[in-house]
Image (tube, rainbow, N blue to C red; front, side, top):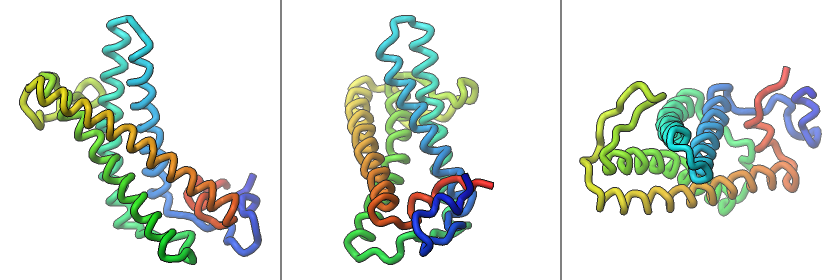
Length: 190
């Protein structure tokens, strides 16, 4: 299917879309979040100690990847600029979109940082890909670890809620407004 067939009406340009770097960081971040979430959820379902350790290390590594992708995202957005595929929206929907994006960016930065601090507070090091030990950002403190675990879990649920709202808004744009918002973020087909 070509990009032009994705357009729902003739008023939307067939080649509308964000820069390739923006799309890359968007989808790479989504995949990293999914892998991190799947790893920690699967960990609760297994009893094998080696597999549980592998899953928590995977969770931590992909959490760090989310943090690194966020940095790349911000740079890409600064370099490529940001264009709105729905510039014709009224003030309230634009404000809601801006606040949702702010919440997404904030939670995608806060959640890995909370996890990193939690790991350190439990007296453990965070390693990228199991190899590169990252600096400790807090000292070992089990009381702090308990509090951080609660905040990390709350932030995860908040991120899930905001991601669902974000995806729902993209679907609303696509199926009800019939504009280019969703198509603009899809990879371009040749």
